[in-house]
Amino acid sequence: MGMVGLPAASMEGDLSVSSDFEGGSVASVEIDNATRTIRFMPGGDPARGWPCWWYFRVDGVEAKEQITFLLKGSDATVTVPGGPPAKPLAASWAMPEAATYSEDGVSWRHTEKGLREGDWMRYQVASSADGSLWIAWGPPYTPGMAARFLKELAVTSPAAEATELCRSREGRAVPMLAVREGDRPSSGRFGVWIQARQHAWESGSSWVAQGFAEWLVGPSPEADWLRQNAEVFLVPIMDVDNTATGNGGKDARPQDHNRDWTPAPHWNEVIAAQQRVLGLAKEGRLDIFLDLHNPAPGDPTFFFILPDKLLQEPMVGLRRRFIDLAYDRISKIKPLIPMSNKPKETGASYHPLWKQISSNWVCFNGNPHTVSLCLETVWNAPSSTPEGYRSVGANLAAAVSAFLSERPQRR
Ligand SMILES: [Zn+2]
Image (cartoon, rainbow, N blue to C red; front, side, top):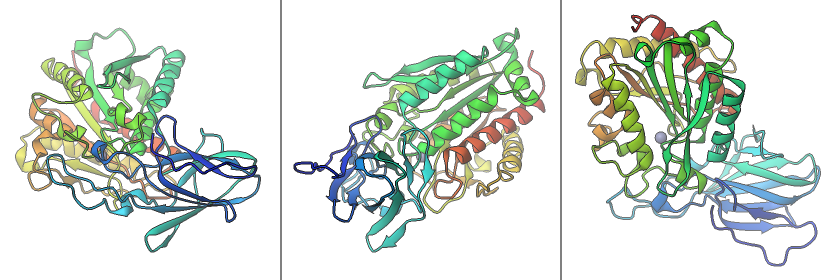
């Protein structure tokens, strides 16, 4: 929840802004009721991650009026953990080409493209009815949504179990889905681990995870094969605390979640995920580990990988095969999801804490055949919507099924 500049006495027909709900974030609000214009910045405590996420509700909207939103980058200084205060985060992280809005708080669509005017980005929304509208950096995906979604899946699919990975440091449940079907014992199943949202602002990655889960419990023969032959664990939101409180999460103190994969992690979610993942590795069945993110503003969809030269076969060849299968599917999605088939590398030159990045840590602590990668899904494209993200997740899941069906059957 972010700070809100409350308007003085609210009058009939006045607009008001609030962010005191799960995932809400906004700061420096100024409302001009005459021109129906709302000026704002992203909220969030920079000690809890990059202040680039924003999400709030506007009340007092009248039917068929146009509301103008003027967004400025946060002026809060940010630091790398352990480092001195640095200059504010580049505004581009907070400024999608199109914002995302909703008239019911449930279904989300893009605004028209925003117009950059100096330090400001101008978005406009035409309302269809009296009431409220919600507007955000991207389609919100909160811990409450994750819990409800997993419970619904478990009700409709006997193969799905809605459970908890752990409790967060602030006591929140971390929802987790476990999927398996049939009598095959665990030892005879491929192990698949899917996690999203180690960085709280990257809401699109949770929608990708949801699309993966929806495909997995769906009717296709490939999904049925995966349920029968694998055990799949899926965590739609790792950093539930920063997601719930509308903070950015990335570079949060004392440790970014995705630099926390050490022998003694700070975050409960990382501790619990490591235990589960190491358990699969011990049983020789840590087959797939996927860490889901959203990238930089100008990036397409791509995989982050450890450089080949740091790894041995069969890991390198298997990983190449998986990337090919995933690219072949995701790049054919309509409408187009921009994707590069050339992975980027997260070795020593990428970040000083490169060994503590989850997908890298898993390469070093997994099995010789483990395929461990990070998928970054484009967030600044016309297809960066719930539908587009879910489609990426569905095609990623299909690639997992295709990949594992080529592997020797587990006994
Ligand atoms: Zn990230």
